[in-house]
Length: 343
Image 1 (tube, rainbow, N blue to C red):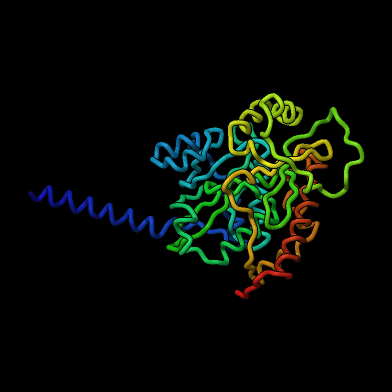
Image 2: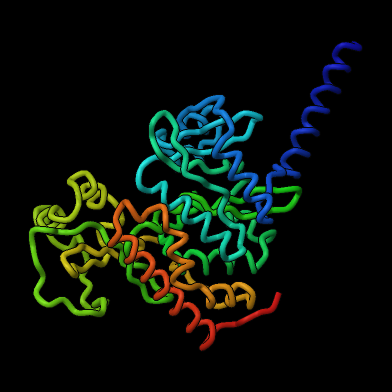
């Protein structure tokens, strides 16, 4: 009888500890410049203890929702001391690092620390792993209106058009609900957008064809709908710009009906227009964030993307120019018809 009573007390104690851990969350912070630099140093230099596929990690933890948004090409990495991180190789690694740098420069702290690191001979981004407790929808009553406004401002200015729920993590840090923006690969895409609408995202270039005197302004009004004809017509339109596998994914998805246009030998798709995703914009702005956005300079934007320069200098210059164009749109919208609040 005493053994059973003792066992039940132990189980109760373990349950209480787990609940408390969930309420407190993890204690890593990168708010101050000192804390951010210390975390970057750990990610860069701490020895690696283990590596596994990120999807496998979530399945082992019974995190099925997270597993559906993850791929094993991304790796779950445990560093010495128990620090957990996510490794992503390839060109989009540069976007993860740029997203972190942009968030820090604006003083938002919304993107977890990320660095470029070589693991097993491959260069990629190593980003602090954030233990999510749910989605924005479930915790919106605990997230400040400033945090939501700052997220939308950050997304629009820096071109993160891919805003599905898996890219926005809600977590607890020292007992408070916080927001972390991950998987910022969309920032790396060239795009044209009008504030309040979805972005037209560049999806490849046809180097075999020269367009005749293309307009200097992006021709938003000339967009047409994909998928209105046969499969043969659909594939004939897209194959010069993207791979067959990519084309098939579009054909079999909601994006099949997305608006598109061909401009300057490139295919541009308004990808989320055919889905239930809402455009990224806000009508509420906070003065401190708006001031930082207004003061962004070309040199500051270049510093965010500096690691990607060697990958494609012309693409790098496009990213910088388009970022400042979006910034100008947002500031103009805020000053002309926005609600601007103090802290």
